[in-house]
Image 1 (cartoon, helix red, strand yellow):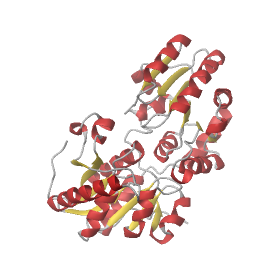
Image 2 (cartoon, one colour):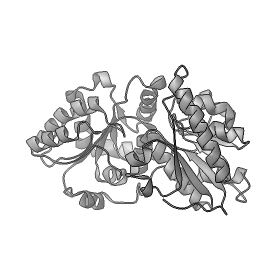
Image 3 (cartoon, one colour):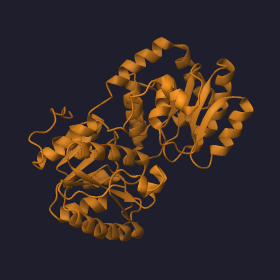
Image 4 (cartoon, one colour):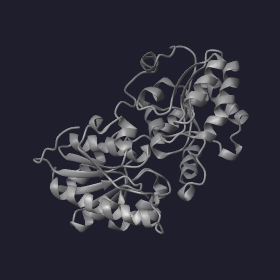
Length: 380
């Protein structure tokens, strides 16, 4: 982990929780550094170990604070919030932080409240079509809210919202399919299907896609698979692919998604906003199976928006049988015309300068740069 440079404007980036909060936050922190700021990350306990192996692998200074899932009737939530608030205030003062940017999730409230208590401006990034509880709770405290889906602006307050997209991890779009396949140990020929259930895995998706994979292998004998299973399914999936005789890269969690996405012809996955932004960055056609029963059913709304625009196919989980998923993937693999049309629609969802635009907007407000980035298209 880098040391702290007190000569630069300190910007707190609260991005703990799931990968959907962490990786856009990390990408934004990189853009802030490039723009001349000194980012410091606020994470939940164990986040560094989970996402990058250890705190030593983080490219920026970081502090892990107590945090619990956002439940207004939970005593544990308030106890951790109070401890996190104290820790965040101490860090903000010590590092002379000038502003805080939060990407949502239950780690965000403490740094945001700490910033406001010290008179510092707060910025929010909301990646989903339906804002999460934390961002809804904090929206009135924010100077600006950056969104991916225009649909999110109604709940956050249209006047404070700007559509900036989702910053993605470095490397997306920067490697060819053949290079990615070689690095991952896959054959350069034959279709590659990426199956991704999100940073926490997806048991229901695993259960359905393993039988579907067997059918796909029968139709496409050279098919290869990249399957991100979550911790509990990795060994079971490896055995299943060995029994099929399929070439497959199976991992509980994979921190080189830019390679996995570049190597694939088609993806099957959930509809978290960060994953969707990564699909758009590499123009990867996908079948989306949104995780049901999340707050506001936001994954389904995300998937619906992509499906309406022609950027993806959507199958609701209750209808996502192995046969249904097999048929959807098969259609995409058989029709290059359909895949190319989907790639064109995906391009409209890609914001290549999202991190830079957000960083320069924040630093422009602080007077740290002479002018902000070219105008972000206001959300309607």
